[in-house]
Image (cartoon, rainbow, N blue to C red; front, top):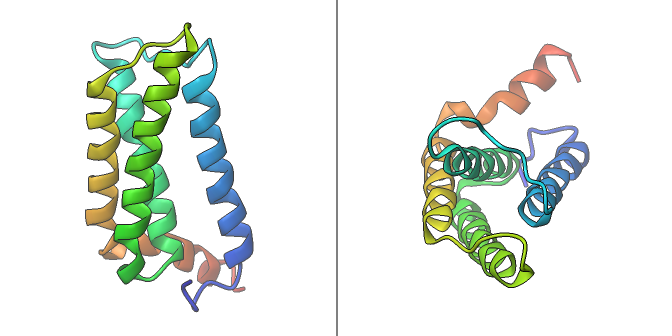
Length: 126
């Protein structure tokens, strides 16, 4: 947990809602369609990047790898569930897109880019 975040509990709840949204969108029979070539892969990468960057802001750098591994495991698990569902497809490239998004979020999570929640709190003078 980052000690400089005054609204850590709120940010944490929002993060868990983000995870729940990714799970829901991964398992719904009618996912969001991005109308470009390989749009679903872009969606996967962006979703997993967003989750990783969000949690990178909430936790100290030494925990980022654990969050990243957890998100990659989530992406793999959801692909298998999609394959078993009968209405969604199992795709290895979706797993690669998920892992790519997590990796990008992990790399940026160690930079000042992962401090915008702190900056927001300072701006609104919490």
